[in-house]
Length: 88
Image: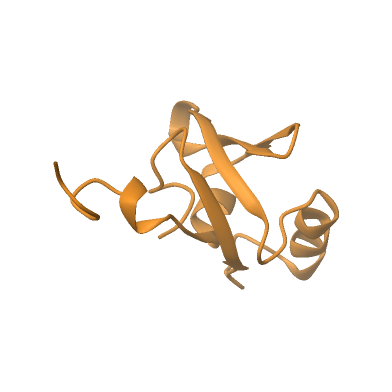
């Protein structure tokens, strides 16, 4: 799933930054400089108008536009995704 589809307030693991029209090589480098690297723990804090997201990495919060949010692929723990994991 991508950050644009991810639920808020759930810690996830960043899998990759897709090479899409929305992210140039320089843009992907800048995202890595900001801490968006494969294996990083990331959390969506807020959805913004027009599809953007505010994400948290450690103690830092970063704003992503909608196209960039769609290019950031993440994996949520199975128990954190509605409909998965064990039920009581």
